[in-house]
Image (cartoon, rainbow, N blue to C red; front, side, top):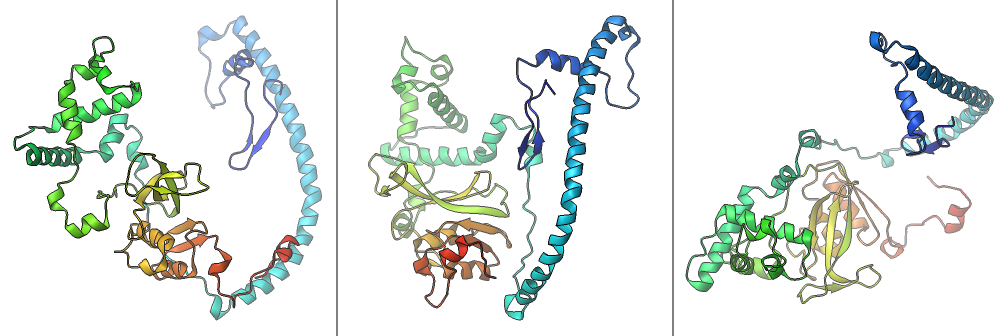
Amino acid sequence: MAAFRRVTYDAIFGEKKYLRPGEDDDKLLHLLEVDSDIEGYDLEEDELDDGVFQEQDTARGDIVEMAIEEENVLEENDEDNDQIEGLDDEIVEISTSNEQVQQDEYDSEDNVPLKFEIQDNGDTSLERINFTPSDYFSKYMDDNMFQTICDSTNVKYMLLHEKPLNLTLTETKHFFGISILMSLLKYPRVRMYWAKTTRVYSIASVMTRDRYFKIRNHLKIVVDNDISEHLRKSDKLWKETCLSLPRENVVAVDEQMIPFTGICGIKQFVRGKPNPEGLKNFVCATPTGLVLDFEVYQGKDTFLDNTAKDLGVGPSAVVRLVQTLREGSQIFMDRYFTTIPLLEYLLDNKLHGTGTIMKSRIPRSVQLTSESTLKSGKRCY
């Protein structure tokens, strides 16, 4: 066991043993030279020399010592388990009767749990195993998206200057590629990418400086004249919602602050946040942190078109963000969002909701378990 660290236990992966990088390289090489554990595998004839067998004998000795120590540990654990099994049988007999009483009380007509059929989430992760970075980017920014940006930018330039910009699809892609590269190099001034002393060939050779600034100053993703006056006033952030991501059966809804100190009509200040000043954003995300949908808060009129606008801002944000989820999905949230009317609304739409709730949002007729009872370990059913 000298080649391994102390055995640790992980709640997900169980027992884990780690080699020390650098210190255990030689011992690891010896272990790799031992006969394969695969049945029917034989060494080549030219490997059957004395030197090889001497090295392998040393490695086998280390493995035998390791196996003996592990076997002793397993035997001790088996003895402990035999002593505990008798106690487990007694505990099971006692707890079974209590569980039966609790189950009989729960299985009444008034306490029938709602069960919704959970549909397949349409996971496409296997299709993305061999994806390159450009493949991932094209998954969300395809040619249709670039063509829309190209057309909208051309329209804006024509309306402002009464002459064509002649922006093409390829040139639009070059513009975004240059912008991404700039975000990695992080020059203090944009003009430095074309300056003689700090020139970046992969940028300057693709697009001239003046052309880049002209596109950037007129960049649009929507034609303003196609947007109704009502939508302009109610939604200042016209956007295309990305629906290509597979929807998980378990999601969380929360708020986040997008740090921003500039001038913006929808900027908020939320005291107590790590970044209190910026754009307030409601997010629906998977357990791995992947954002499925979001809604930027634009004031009290953000959810005017929502069918559940009477529930309040927080609950209305939940209703807006779960519109693309399948029946039977589980939504987790904190006390800012959770209300009893919201949970009833979710159940009516065959969705499960779980979250902490403020005491002021609970009817006074409902008697909650006191903190002293909870601390004593007692539970109510």
